[in-house]
Amino acid sequence: MLVGAGQVRRRLAQAAVLAGLLTGCAGAADDEAKTSASASASADAAEAGDTAVKSGGTIGAAGSACELPVSFDIAEYWEAEAVDAGAAKEKAADSSADSEESEFAQEIADAILRQGPVTAACEVDAKPAGNIGFLRIWTGEPGDDDARAVLEAFVAAEGGTSKAKYRTFEAGGLSGVEVEYLHTSKLLEETKEESALAVATKRGPVVIHLGGFDTDEHRDMLPAYELAKRTLRAT
Image (cartoon, rainbow, N blue to C red; front, side, top):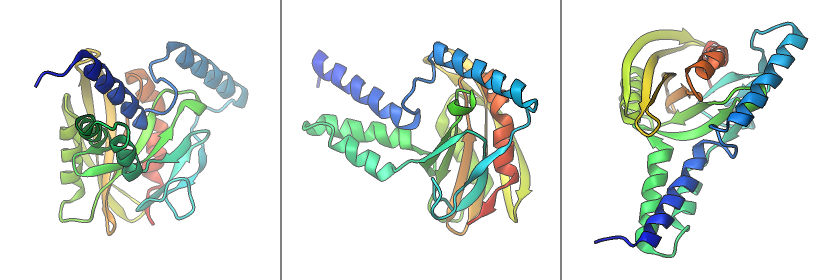
């Protein structure tokens, strides 16, 4: 059945709104914001005379910004916010009185909020620290898959990935697997570096992913990712 132009526009608008669920309120591709944030961060670093990443607190434990199966330190000035996937899907379902459009909105929400075997649970925004990107934390149900299998499925579900390099690590009594890979956006026709790690806990698998506006931003944020990995503990 052909969909009218008005319906197409509404569906595209829904998709755009839902995409904002995991990209924050400010546009990540805003060059002006990027320039301003980078300049501010450079000034702060120069004033402090120390470019090493510092801890800005711990998330994951009960009562923290994001309650997770693991806890870890986030970099100074980074801001964590929990993602309620269930509530987001309900909101998507209620976004239209038209049943077909509502179903489409739910499909988009599920595609954004779920990647492979895990669902979005928390995002840590780097913009307050002067970078454009996020640490995103994804959690799954307990099962038989080990960390490597979960991470491979996560990367495969992203699509457009290549040159993945996996290796094991240990932190806080946890054994995990991490990966570095390239992601190519068909829409933007750009390729950038990304990193992710996975651990298996009694409460289910956890994936921590670091993307970024581009490869330069990604590399600038790697110290924050390494801080999270180094301080990782089961809760």
